[in-house]
Length: 369
Image (cartoon, rainbow, N blue to C red):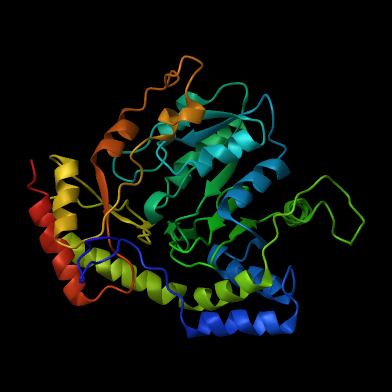
């Protein structure tokens, strides 16, 4: 970036070490580069993160969501309840299978779906709910599961930002019909690009494997209509290396967040729900005053920062009504969060001196008016 300070602390720093490079080269030299032994091993090993559920690797987190909905039979005429305060992929996956997105509001503290809002959004056409474990904080899955069971809804967990997060000792991705993870480079672990679906149902897992591979289990023996959403063995090999570091990196993110919690006094630090395991994909604060001014001060101090997400999904162009206006959604907590949040660096490569600078800059920026 032109004019960037030499001591600039980026908001995220993807880790690509020698072990990842060596793993990629090893696979390239093997000639087994697509849907081979590395993918199978990655699926097996990632199962330990999701209570030993069946895992199906795909080429992105968005593909994970889309294939899960397809495997559940979600399509035209169906409604899926989704938070508007999320990345657009959460809602896009619903639209891509032809279903209708119904937006529900979030809890103020967790930034995740409000179970009461979910219950209020259910209609006779509702078939599924998609809680997003935003920023690495688990949604209130115990309450959401209760609503889903009461109304006969499938639960698809969008865990793209929450590898290793959990609630009451249960990891995210092990609550609903399926959990969907992303391995994009800025996530808590990555495979350069990729995704994973977790499920307790072996038959459902087989359907997902068919869908990701043109409907085939045996070559040229197509059983259903599918797509090409396979993960490469190069990506899987990188993911396997990253997975061995996930626990250590998560502990460092949590330690970094704990330090920031103890030092930041001029912004509202992120609360953590009882019995929740927050893995801090983002360390997201709320600004009491002028957010634009706060961001400007942070940048002046060399502290990378970002707003996730400045525009709720229901206000994005593809989700506006025919009149160009948002639909009939009353989402006050969503709109409040979109106007107040800033995410600060929390990644595991931060040094103690970095953390001190981040906290000092946040306190200075928090006084911006």
